[in-house]
Image 1: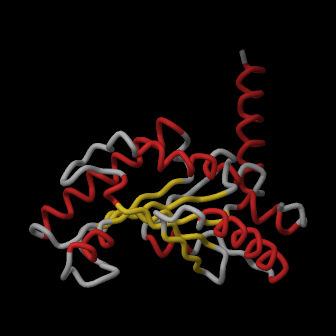
Image 2: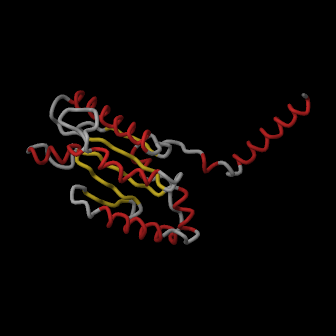
Image 3: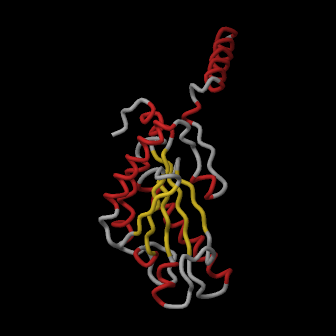
Length: 206
């Protein structure tokens, strides 16, 4: 009995030392509190890795841009891809449950969460200014949760963070039907994770 207790204590000490030295740190993910934090974490520290990742992400963005329903942008000096999906492709008017076609749209992004910390993904939901501010915020919160739940069932949410903005941050003035449609949107941010950064450092990112 005494030997078993001693063995358990030794195992605990070894695990603690491994964690402190970074041996288990790759399994630890501290979820970002803001969208800006999500976009800017983790940092690519050296120029060589940055160039490799920027070229890789640019190729990915070029492939995604073939879908004319989506708007593809890049930020953080070509390291992060932003995919904008009209909310009308995912939800019926004022609905908070995903429509029948939503899975066909979202399934293209499950692969980005398949390899642990290869990508970190942030999803941000927006609405137009139809209705009160509180109505828009509640609607956006529930829609965002539906998308998050879909990824939880169909992929992984370990490296997925979510942010709801309601009617704030419109990309166009809410003065026409077309403009309001564009303001109702889901933005998906595809951010290089530590696994991708490590492959870039070792020049094996393809």
